[in-house]
Length: 235
Image 1 (cartoon, one colour):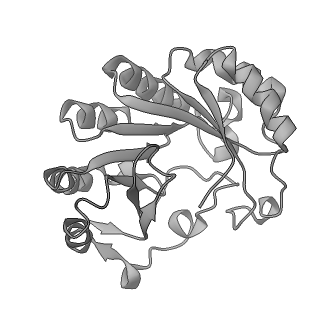
Image 2: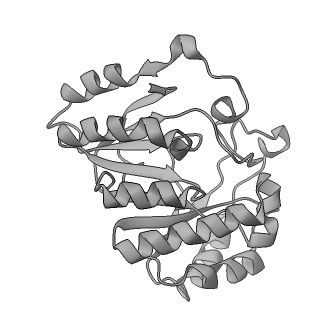
């Protein structure tokens, strides 16, 4: 298995733990505001890829210094078959494992939970179902997201559902409509969009929401999920 980025230390990507973050290549969405276009629309840079053996060697030297490993992308569960043996080795080294996913691979999520290979899922909740087409996604993708959500909630595994709020795509009405569909989740996170490189260059210079605007969205979300927070800082 190959990875296309390694953040050696993060205090944010795995809440409550010191972790490293691994980036996979490829995604089945094309979110215009995605800040990792090199992992989604560009060809993989195999010359600078990182082998799983190299990662495992790195982790073996970080035992006692790192608590966990975050697998993100792209969409990491696109490489589910190759992911399983790698995660098994990571778990043997004693690390917690968190996966960031768009939720469109419910069977993969179910198998990972049954095999006890993942300790934390962060699932992206993009927008209302009718707006998923903005991500070049379909109604089937949203149905898969809802199935993934049900599997995770029923399993009792630690999780958070998160929305990156983007000016022009999200507003008070959008959040009001989104929230009832995730009733019963453990935690909901509102992430403020941070201008940077994006798949659609028109989004690169958009301003994020102000503190007051985020507080309004937080208040709306808390009516459904009490454990809701704003995440307004990124590494």
